[in-house]
Image (cartoon, rainbow, N blue to C red; front, side, top):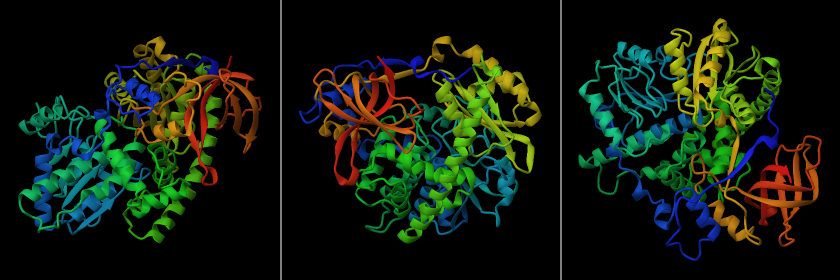
Length: 597
């Protein structure tokens, strides 16, 4: 199967989910229609005030976790936060360490597993590496699948609180408490089978928690809110000394956006509060340094800046080096030291980009081969690939082919017999459930797996790769309808003549926060290309004329030049953005797709 040409992309326009009403005149009619296409019909639905957050008390597992943390703080236990090596895990670790210290814990440390040594999550090897052993482990963004790791910790007499947002497997670890919004409809747990009363109660409680979309950092923030509330009831704070946990919201916003969880209303509340904190210059030193390293403006930062400029620089450390560098950047309050960490992270990210480009090019050559002509579920493996980059490769190939893709690499240079895979899926194909089906039909083929509907990770033996690749293609053929293999790009329709103004661009920029499941507005119009030039050998800068009124528009399209000029008459799908070169703002079209007309 070769990469589909751009002409195979189907454009569809989003339908309004109702009639906008009650908007003030200051809200542009185009923005009102954009909101309506996302189910937001009036101003009450964009009041992203923290007071409208879901209550922490409605999230299952809180009572047990809070009680254990209060005991740990009271008796001065050693607490170790066991994080993860992605941006969500790093920000969640920083939130946990900062928050627990604010709430009175004096002996808090953290550890991040090395993906090449310890594997993912709270593994037995990771537990054994903890020296000296803590009295309490609090996981962040991992742990729901760590049955063996929790057992190893318990064998050392360590108490364990799991905070996670990943989907549970058939068995839960026998931890002391678990906070996870996706812990529902349990069939078994680590305490008893059928589920014990405690776990069954938490599952029922989580059904009442409307949002299943919290990122790992969001779950940790919720636990801290519940802990503070209980400490307040116990009169633990002297007058005027209650900690302000809103100082952590910049970290919550970054982790939530970077982890690509759906931005439902509750997550938009959290992200907007964090963005406001950053824009006002009150973010932690590390985030400010990372924003500057990404050449973004702190004062005008938006959610997409977190996703495209800040998150990747933090993620690069976990992919290639040691995520402790990223966590230290987020924990320091020294601006000079934060800039130093951010500089190191930026250098690692540049190395990551080069490796990714090389691996993606190799992957495209592989899928152009005859063996992939009819593949529906695409599995890729190259012995020279880096295990920390395969998720990015899977994502890029998935976008090009519009097929679910799993990319594999050796677990480490010293361990070529084991493969680590990272999966990315398309809408309608639940990738983790697909892996669970393969595991049930061919026990032992997959050694470990876990994840979400759209992304997952797994490990298997190198010798079993051909058998797995065949099984993955077979399950994809079985479960994916043919129409879902058609790539579709949804737009918000045409902008009326004269609407592409700086005023509207400013409203759209800060009207979100936009992100996963609450997509940034895209428009499509017919244009005439009056001039164009190449920037940095691969980007296009164009001037487009609207034939309806003759107006001219500056436009840019990144990574779009492949030796051919753009068509003289074209339909373009674009964001209405802002060009703020040298501090002078003007509207600019950021092209996402063009096709000749």
